[in-house]
Amino acid sequence: MAYHPPNSRDEAVATDRHDILAHAREAFDMEGGLVYLVGHSLGPATHNALDALHQAAHYDWRRGLVRSWNTADWFTLAKRTGGQLARLVGAKPAEIMIADSVSANLYKLASAAGSLAASSDLIVEEDEFPTDQYVIEALAGMSGVTFHRAAPGEGLGKLAETGGVLVHSLINYRTGALRDMAAAEKIAADCGGVIVWDLSHATGVVDVSLSKAGARLAAGCTYKYLNGGPGAPSFLYVRKDLTGKLESPLPGWMGHARPFAFEATYTPAEDITRFANGTPPILSLAALSGALEAFEALDISLVVAKAQALGDLVTRRAGELGLDIRSPLDASKRGGHVSFAHPNAHEIVRALAARNILADFRAPDTIRFGLSPLFLRFIDVWDAMDALADILETKSWDKDEYRKRAAVT
Image (cartoon, helix red, strand yellow):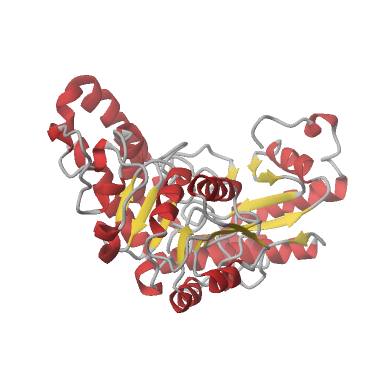
């Protein structure tokens, strides 16, 4: 079906009534009356994720104990879960591994990419997510190679100039701007450079086609639109023909070709398992595996189309309110969240929360509305924008209690 942003509350109700993805909401165990606009930060729990976690904790661990490495097949869970995720990023199951955090995986991949690139230079843009910048600058310092912190939008130019390694987010975490992966990979191929993609804000809400775009390396998190749960492990992607050519800078026993031979010297596994390190987090993997079941019967093109229409609804109404919209207005160039700025952004987010509408704040002045299409309805977003309009008109955000900042914002 074609999605169009509604022009009234009644239209929003009607759009939801005919939404072909309406059934996807049933997969989630959510509080009634809550409008959750933070799925781009932490996705809500699905029934299957909670059931899988219960099975892993109360039966496989509690009763099976160490036997469950074999009887519950814990040993292959990371690879099997990677296989579930592969379709969502346009990759082959053998090209995806679930392991560690995004920070660790970016470090591993950027280090390994040096053997493929024309130069050893490491590049990151100054508006990338902070962990990307920290990791790459530290890697450059430890490796003794040249580090470039490029201005926003100039990373590809620096890549073309140096033929080095660029860590590049497919979607900007602040603005939601979506990059052209295929065009970027063409630049990398022409200059002999390598791009390590950060898919953290993209997977599960935009069309990610790693193989089709010619991507070689990528990492991303699973607790945002994939709903894997707080601290869910990251995933990494290595194009299959490159796996045997790359070495992880963090060899661990689970990446060994024969981990239970307990050999003194390291022999990397022949497949993507070579990028594993220590013992996998079984409980988190179980929850993630259960969460990914919510996507199994879904057409990702419909997921993308609904996310775009929800975003168009937000940008249109935010424009009517005179807000400073920081996200692309063209839905084809935008990911799953819409950002706008206001001098009192923190207080406004707190005022929304008081009405059971959860959005998020990013310092110094940004409000982000995450539009996760599996569980959000058009009426949810319409009502959230009505509430925002009322908060701005009445200045009900102007309270001392809303100025106090928690440790996590």
